[in-house]
Each structure stands twice: as C-alpha cells, then as structure tokens.
Amino acid sequence: MPASDGPDRICTIRIELTDSEPPIWREVEAPVSITLNDLHEIIQVAMGWESEHLWEFTIGRQRFSPDDDLIGPFAKLSNSDDIPLSDVLRPKRTTFHYLYDFGDSWEHQVIVTKIRPPEAGVAYPRYAGGERNGPPDDCGGLYGFYEGLASIARKGGDDELDEMDWWAEGFDPNHVDVEGIEYGLRGLAGRLGKPRRGKKSKARPGSAHPFLDDRSTADIFAMMVNALSTATPARPKRPASASKK
Image 1 (tube, rainbow, N blue to C red):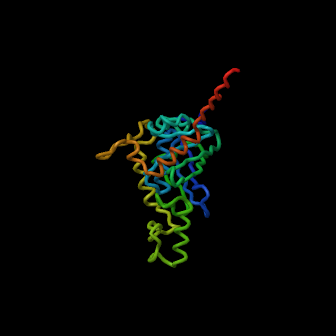
Image 2: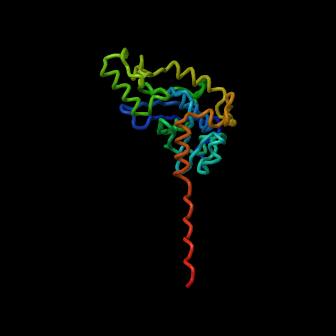
Image 3: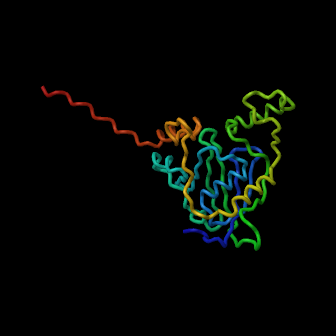
C-alpha cells in the first residue's frame, strides 16, 4: 500500500553512486506523485548523466524498465511508464536500486525519506545537496573512471593523458555543477507526475532494426548475457532405449 499519494506530498530522494569512494551523491526533493520514468530523469540531471543508455530500477524483487522492446524478451521486467513513486514507498524509508548503462554498469542506491507536505511557493523537483563530480558517460565504468583520475594525478596535469582518458581533460572531481542541476530540474518541474509512454527508438537511414540501431554494442551484449542468464534451460531429452533382445 502506498505510503502517500497525490501531488500534495513531497519526499527527499538521496542518490548514491554505488562503490564510489569518497562517495558521489546527490539529494533532491520531489513530489511522491512522480512516475518511475520521472525519477529516472531526475537522477540523470542530478548525477550529470546524458541519458544515452538503457536503464532499470530494481525495487524489492521487481525490475522496471520503460522500453517495450526490452520488456518483451525479458519477462521479469515490468513497464515503468505509469508507476507512481508513491506506489513503491514504505512509510518512513525506502531503499532501492537504479542501474544506468548495462555496459559500464553504473549502479546507484536510491533512498527515499521524509514524506511531508510541500513548502508554499516552491517548484519541485528541487536540488538539496551533493558532493563530488559524477563520472561522464562511456568512461569505462568505475574502474575506468578511477584509472583516469589516477592518470591525472600521476602526470600532474592533463597535457599527456592516455587516449582512453579523453574525458579527463579539465575534469574536476570535487566540482558539483549546482547551477546546471538546478537549471535541468526546473526544466522537468512542469511535466512531472504525468503518465506518458517512453520514447520509441527511431531507425537511422539504412538501419536494419530500429531498436538495435539506437543501442551501443555494450548495451546489446549485456542484454544478451542477461537473457541467457535468466532463461529457463531446456530439459535434456531421454536417450533412446536400447532395442529389445
């Protein structure tokens, strides 16, 4: 049973990048009436992601994704389009997981607390705090991210970075782009909590398959591995009996 519903209640949402050390985290205040798709967009803005890859929430034993093409072959995934956050909340504290980019595997812990009435005259979602710069897309996961930071430290600057560390030029690991986050959240404020279908993939000219065309190779490979790991193996056939003498 939902802990609360309707647009007259808000909550504090803490997003932590799993296994980051020191921790990379953000806090945002948002209505409990937002959908899981809305929450995905809030996380993308708050963490500085670019929404270029597949994603899913894992809440208890249930997994949620917005993409019909992904849900079809993956029976254990449910559609996140019209699921209000309030439907998955416990009364005081709710913790669940958000995975972004099935290749680099950016795992986040999401903690929802402090369900309460909103402040008068405040537009939500609202940025409430955070520490340290989030990794950029396609930098190779946590290992690649910290290797890049170590490369900067070893060389004392970014003049001779390795080709794999392209993202590290000018990167400040302690900077939080508060102005950019607040601007992005203001752009979301007018349409949160309104159920809508996820975007359909569009084929580029000459594409053989619109779904595969919009996904990175790493995403597609991860989906194939996931499908094989969750599939029920076929029962082996009984060998033919020997002919009677």
